[in-house]
Image (cartoon, rainbow, N blue to C red; front, side, top):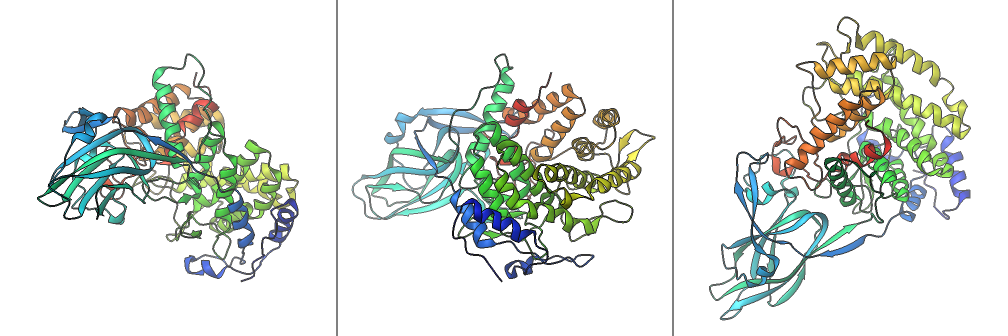
Length: 560
């Protein structure tokens, strides 16, 4: 494949890139051919200037800030069926008591660092006894929530790799020795178990420290004075969630999967603009995603950063739409026309690739081999929500095209929007019940109503009445993730249901805090706090960036 060498990072290169990418049908990226999916119609091949995009991404790579943190003390979990995670925390010693603990084979302790961080663990380990005549073999378990260190991680029953479980076995050959564990962890609690030493000595921990790492910096602008205490706390936890996911990319979760997801990025970027204001990290992530499309130009659902940047094998219809939406948000936040012009061809390419799935009836119909995410709910019908997301993408890029002076690139968007909105109301709005329905069983879900509201399909009164009726529907399908719940809250706000939006925010994110969250989780359902999308609760991520948006919502919108 033909790749352009990035010789400069100046404006001339950006202009050249934009001009080059605007040409149609350039050579395909061979590295993405293995990820191609079946398509209904032939789509021209497409490849960006990968080396140049990667150079621009590297130029915006942040330096990580490190904060050294001491532990609060020693704790023990106590089983308590009244607690959402079935455990409560009892303090059993101060941090000063840690060096006095001499641990031998089979002994353990649990250290509480208070709050959540992403980073490393260091300590000085000494041998205590007749003499150190063997290595010390230790097992560490890093807990984001109390159940991580209260319950055995094995036998493991999840569908994701067991290697993601937050545990480490470390052998230290010589004592005394200062150790900094090389792997990065996400944790509040650290459980230390002594697998073995020898009968002649035990081990003692001194100077045990956490080294918190983040690319976030600066003080947050506080919420207005008089903000209720529970919302202030929700904001604090949301900001901590984003902080610990802000590494050299916006990671989805620092515990797992540690990668950049296209749809997640949109929510992380919005919250960053409102809090830590790290627009360069957003720019870096946009270039990384744009560098690795498949041969028809569709961007990957996720990108790996290490050992070298590469696309994942997942391609998601809704996430592809959000690339352009995130680019439009970026321009609003930064005014950086140069970057947006460079990435504009990638943005409009997403809607053109997906256009083939819009039928003559103007309804988006995803084939079985095209992943539409929306939420982790296993029985959610996604048809109506995806229709609205595609409409939303058309609207945002139509407006962006006018701002860029690229109206000719989106000249047919207005007609497409009108046709797809009419089709959405005809196909998905049930006039008899007054709600939006989806699929052959006419499923009523909050996903459909959230996205019809965000995309402004129908009149505001129509959307407001439909959303209110959906909330009151007994068997309405509710979200399983903070990701979709963000759009539920935003959709409620946009159609004028402010009290319902506030109640949802308090019940959902406040519910996680009541369950013990120091950062917000990947998946949570109030009726089932231990929901496990991958079949084992211990593989869940409990600091997941798509849950950070209360810090954005509370600053962007008035809830009163």
